[in-house]
Image 1 (cartoon, rainbow over the protein chains, first blue to last red):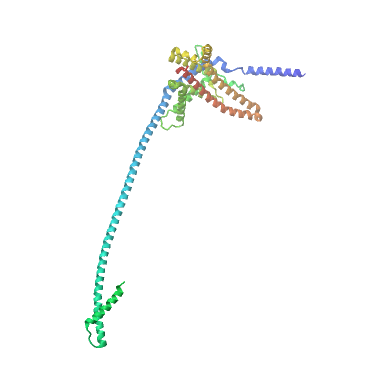
Image 2: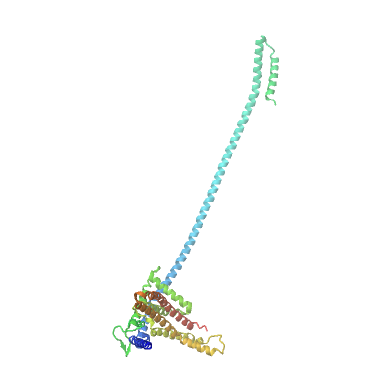
Length: 196
Length: 243
């Protein structure tokens, strides 16, 4: 029984595979030479035309474009280099100008300061001279005054003492002896004052 | 029929049958996508040729791809490979755009057909061989005799070198074709799972499908890059004989 079923299954599957294969006209269509010549013909035609058009018209244009772009880029780089050099030069010049002006300004400032200082110094010197002169003058005056005042003081002292004596005693005393006493006293006094 | 994951690779005629000398060169869906890819490349790169010092987005795209491929060529094949720049550029762009257009649902992937990739690879192989013989004459055969190999091993090495050289167009074409075919088949299979498992179990294959789409876009770019860079390496062998 089982054997029969298995046999039937195999027979059926064989029939089905056969019918399926026959329906699908088995094998690879690639190996069917019916259209080989046609395929070769059209391949040669299309590929040949493609090759001719590409190599004669399109590829030279593309290579030309690439070349021009390359040369253009090189040119641009060259000009850019040139301009960069120029700007560097200009920057150097600019720096130099700035440096020069700085030095100049410093020099100017220094010289002006020196001038002002000199001026101040001169003025101070002349003022000091003037002041010294004035001091000397004043000292001289003071000395003179000292001398004259001493004489005057003794004179006044003699006169007042003579007057006093006159009033006290009522008679004139020898002026020379009085003056001698007063001078002696005043000298002592002056020594006390100026001494040491 | 539509559930068959290989159905998407079918080529069918669009428009009338064109026959020249009994050879069928009808316009097919493959031809349509070749034309679309080429036109897209031409439109995008033509928009990218605008002459302005500061590029807009499309111009930037065009110029970046230009310098990307130019750098790739000079890195792998040296300055001698400069005359072949436009060919490698067209090759890379054509393969890339065909791969990318194939990622659009219901579109057709031109590069998933072995005949297309094989014609490209064979053209490169023959071209590189001719360049090698023109540049070095019969000295180009020295490519098969590496220096510093003991005399005893030399016959074996030469045979291996010749086989590896001859297998270049096959490996180059099969790599691209198989990658594109496998990826698209896998996406179709997972898409089929989403439908058959329905709203209950279809979420997992749907997630796989989303992840695979990202992967396939990466593969589409990578395979175009590999195709171009291998061309550069073969060109390098032909231009600068190192052995």
